[in-house]
Length: 310
Image 1 (cartoon, rainbow, N blue to C red):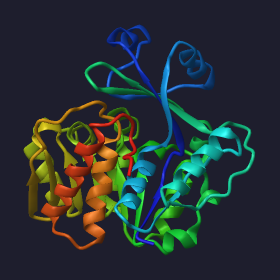
Image 2 (cartoon, helix red, strand yellow):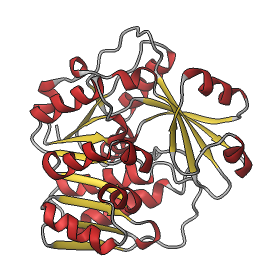
Image 3 (tube, rainbow, N blue to C red):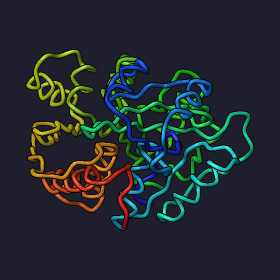
């Protein structure tokens, strides 16, 4: 197997909202907020659902890789409930091997409200449910060993059980890639993430805000200096400024695509990472990897949701 992803198995519930909905509900635009089941259900009662689809950051990347013809798998914790069944079916339909045996859990399958404002930005409200309870027993060590690259998401990182699951997976892996996921996520786990980037990861995916927050710098030149010193592959998306990959002393850039009919920015980073990894495992050049990532990312932002329809 080429790539095995481990991440939050979350069912995305996509809703369109007006700008004032974000402020009225004390949300921070373009970020992800974790809530309990009560708050989640309260919000859900006042929203009109556009679409429901299997999601989760790394799962979106893995589906993108499957659609590009790669042999991939995914581990994520769901409960044996309606949403859990839908989640598994959604992956199987996309030819992703699901390395997890679901059972009835005390907590339901995780759900994420994706709130799309008229400017196409997305703000997420997540009830992690059982996805956030992943532990080392949920990790299929053989599946990890049999994959060329293990792909993890920062969203999953938490003290206790998920952390142990992460460490077990990393200890059995051949090569490890991780996405920093979200600015608040980076700020919550800064020392741990910095340790991972410096010592455990072979490849780090981040956007400009996340990486600058992680290493506490003010200019992008400082990011390039940091990446060169770390001596690992660091791939950064920069919105309208395009994307950049830094590997040892090699710095390669790629321009952003212009004149796109942007509908929803959900999944832009996920599909970018999927496209980049597709190039990497198929022995393309760094520039080609960035181009494929940018192409995938520009396609997904012109559709609603984080999955490309074949």
